[in-house]
Image (cartoon, rainbow, N blue to C red; front, side, top):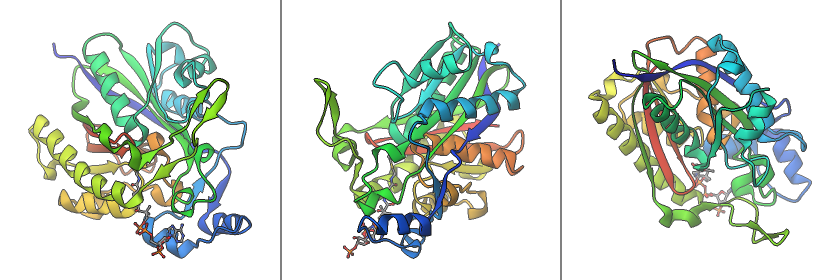
Length: 325
Ligand code: ACO
């Protein structure tokens, strides 16, 4: 019998501190940085974001999302035999956020590791977990996207600091006799490192280079629009499906204009586009599972629906996962 993987439960967690655009703009004004709610809404669709307290880490956010996903799946932490955390803002250089999160869940022994593909991290992690489940290396996996991007923002750079937020989302992926994940498609092109990066690193006990996020927004925008369409089409072709078979499109929540343009290219009505970027900003690897969980809990997404998940981000990386919920 063919072995597949399917989502058994979803969860998410946002840190309590919520900043509207107006609140962020007022805060930035005290630093001499000028922006406005109008500019942010018009260019990005973002209205608010959450920021974690200074002592809260990605694994702190991720473990809460994981507990919610376990509860939704009707499982205990001890049932889990694989943990993958997608993050670019891990708690430490090492060990991985996944190992720290495993300990916070009160379990030990199962494989736990991080995947670093920036805003494509969750689709990368989900694809790896699916492959490990299908080949029999795991049966019940926690796949988590967790980020504290506020830690790597340059609050003197208005072109980037208004775009991002903190949060976590998670799914329990389990072995199943029926699909589940239908197809996935992952890519990277390292020649674009410079358009979206945090170039600093740790060396000899000091930070070498700049440890804050740098982005050429227009270059990212142009690349994102093209690759999101091609990844969706490649994934549909692998599953022998067409645009019309997609019930819900859940792209990486970076900018409403990129998301709407992808929906139009896939000939999808905008009502089928799941949008949380307005309330969360860009939470990088956490954005897709956060949006998925919001849509599941609101009752939009129902069992049996066909979902297209799409990531795009630093690397440059991009990819898609097509699944039956
Ligand atoms: N408030 C007010 N004005 C601003 C702000 C701000 N926060 N930021 C920039 N401006 C100004 C600029 O200085 C510029 O002024 P000028 O015309 O006088 O020079 C003007 O607004 C227009 O700036 P643009 O950069 O041309 O604005 P654009 O319409 O391209 O929007 C944005 C910028 C929102 C960043 C857009 O390019 C974008 O969304 N890019 C994609 C980002 C993305 O998708 N990232 C995903 C991956 S993230 C990851 O992997 C971590």
